[in-house]
Length: 411
Ligand code: 13P
Image (cartoon, rainbow, N blue to C red; front, side, top):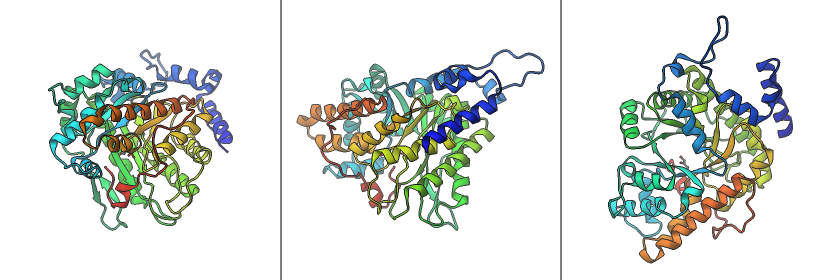
């Protein structure tokens, strides 16, 4: 089915682009020819660039940043949990939610030797972006040394949408431009905004929630690009309770992505200067965990049906998958390559869970925990390149559903 979707995508591209574009049917050639901005026009020629892009002093930088982050074999470490969520994670290993414990935990992650071989960017929370190691070295400098770009979560959380069945709208547009400027000055080069859409067998998500969240993501993305930050656009169809099928998640995710890209287009967001962070396509939690090949088939088909080829990278969230499941599913996606976008990772729980357990706040475990993090990052880097062989560095196959079971939004 995916083969058919790929043929359709190629045919659509060909029909749209007209004659003489055969070279564009090769994704690699397509990337190089269409990512280069047109700077000269002749009379009568269709102008391919929006005013927003033409007048944006950051346009080229945004494209370079996005390409750097989504380079082959590279992914993102998501470490942007709010202080409250970090507290819940620290509590699982008996640590208090103090500024010192949060600082030590993030220092352990960012200073892990060799992390930059596999990780190109890390998403941080406001407190962390301005924090230093216990020896006084700013985290942004530690990351720079590793070749890892700092990113920043800029949404301010979720609020219920009145009249819906517990659906939410992501907040944070007020004052966003000023915050982006402050973050850019501090060294951040990309940002994240997470929209959450719940799915069930019949009515969720509502069209109200889909439209509201697509609008929020598009306006956020435009403001980030106007201020030099590559926006990670994250429309997460959450892995939730219930027996809804994998087909249902595929259908909903395609609809959600399509609305998001419709709105990104409305706001003239520069597609080569964004990164998409979607969910992999999984059924509800009451359905047995599908094989990686099945997840990959539905996931790649959904991306082909709803994500423009101009987007450089699709960085999947781990969303509650076990550490090993996240790696195996990522590897299975690569069987459908080459694709116009890199299919890679932006994992939080799937990189941090067993690392945190291994550390548990004990100085003598510091090195072993850092080695665990780097081994997990390498496994996912190998999977992104389609060459992961195992055994997996994580100990068990448990899904990491703590945040979901607590009823929280997870971030
Ligand atoms: P998980 O990989 O734990 O889902 O977190 C990624 C993330 O940043 C979700 O917003």
